[in-house]
Amino acid sequence: MTQAAPHNLPAYALFAALLASAGLPIYIHAPKFFVDEYGVSLAALGSVLFGLRLLDVVQDPLLGRLSERLRDHRGVAVAIASGLMAVSMYALFAVSPPLPPLAWFAVTLTGVFSSFSFLMICSYAQGVAKAASLPGAGHLSLARWRETGGLLGVCAASVAPVGLGAFMGAPFAGFAVGFAVLALASVVMMRNEWQQVDAPAAPGFAIVLRDPVARMLLLIALLNAAPVAVSSTLFLFYVESALQAPGWEGPLLLLFFLAAAAAAPLWGFLAERHGPKPVLLAAMVLAIVAFGGALFLSAGDIALFALVCIGSGAALGADLTLLPAMFAARMAAISPSAAEGFGLWSLVSKFTLAFAAVTLLPILQMSGFSSDATVHSQSAIRTLIWLYAGLPCILKLLAIGLLAGTELEKGKR
Image (cartoon, rainbow, N blue to C red; front, side, top):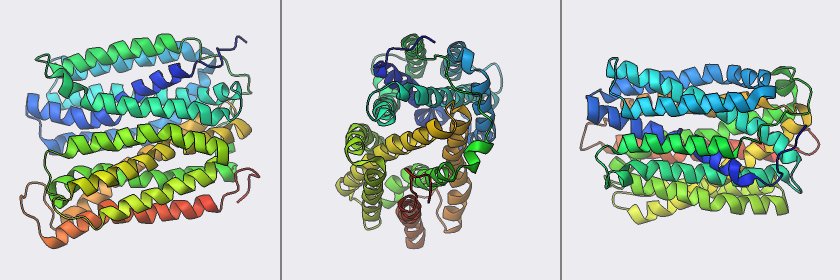
């Protein structure tokens, strides 16, 4: 087997930036684009997005199995999937819909998100083999590069259409072209990284689900990802209605992700020195402090909420860096090919988004909150604040309890 260059970690960062650009930013940009360009209703677009999230939950384990089957030809599969993702992105933003706009929205996003899921699983699975070739704490070193690149990709993709709008009349088409260029560059830089894994074929999901540490890490990931899903679902409502600060959503969201990107390398360095478990526990406590602070803010407290964004964003940097590294280390021990394990990991992460969308918004509506209203009752605002800031604190406390009781080194609880 020809080993890839052991220190080609910037390639993993660039590939992660590509994937991140096709994730959360598209949930932000695509609905607004189709409302503005084609007059599609937000309710209809929301229903399609929820359906796509459910599709992700179903297909991710299957994509993990497909990645495992194709592991000897993963470079070719990655190139094809990257091409499909770039073409789908261009069709979404730069092609006049040959179908009804809502149908075109669903078809093109299915191409984007299915390719995204497959590529993410391949990237994390290959990372397990890559980490074995790195000196020292290989999983943490790789995670530091990968997740920092991903977070910078989120930041760049979130603001790119706005920036391009100052120079061109079709900024979203320009974004799609830029995304295709990034996809090509990422595939070229990663071309030697998809080496064959010297490991027996994975026996399926059973070995992952039978392992007590892997099961616990998946459960911790579920509880730990849920606060991000909750805050992402309610962020715009909180800023507009609780803080009464319309127009600040974009800058505050960018601040949140910049804080995560800046903190991710620091968490990685600390974890290499002190171990990932105590460092992740400290980051979870920081998240509780940050979200707890949001419980006491009122209209106009924009500067204080910026501090909340910095604190919670920094904690997110640890979540995205350390937990996947811990899971990857466990996969290296029990299922070295890792693709099916990360199929389950991807399912857990996306399940929280679907669950948050289907539960939180109805609860908010039952409290009397309406996105169309300019004035809300005090009870509706209190419900919004407790869902946005209080619920994540409870979920984080549960995750802390589980992680504190999990013996990662010995494989026992």
